Length: 114
Length: 113
Image (cartoon, rainbow over all chains, first blue to last red; front, side, top):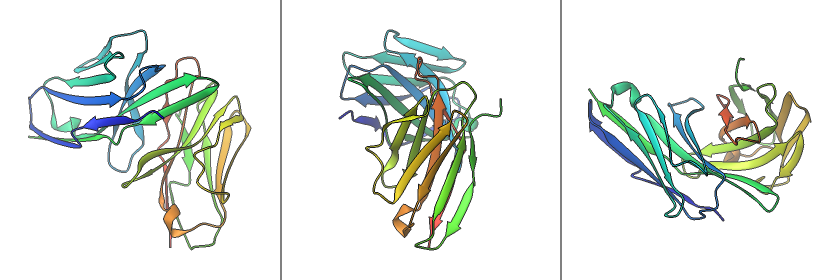
């Protein structure tokens, strides 16, 4: 069974700082990995999707990397802003043997202090 | 496109009552998932449909839970009878099977008293 771990569970940084969120997974035979953002009381918003054949994806101040062999992904946020405060979740999609499993980590709650 | 639409957004009911949650996925997306989110357990997959067919319902906690997808534009998750431990936010998510990207609804917050 795929397990996804996100460390740290919570992170507080001053505005303007660059930061890295970590995600690790146990089964390297993944189909893709997706990073989401969740604001309080809201649904999940997709930030970046990395297919298994890719090493990284970038969108604005966000950069996500994927290292399948080590079972790790990182989400890099440059020049953090108070509006970046949210919970960030990574999700790993495993597709094989007739199954299609998307497993989420428990998230990292980010607070960016003005 | 309006995105994934879920209703109701909030539901408060009494133990033993039937609860029906609804989802309208984005047109053209052939995968649909129902998730439950709680503080203690995070996001848990309940059931997955592909092209309206239930593929994996191993996450459905008990027989009290059932889900249907009668057509590509509508799905329901039903709990009968509901219990206080079913209180959670229930999310519907869908996407194109080929990329595996998921788009979430805003969720239905269920409180069972």
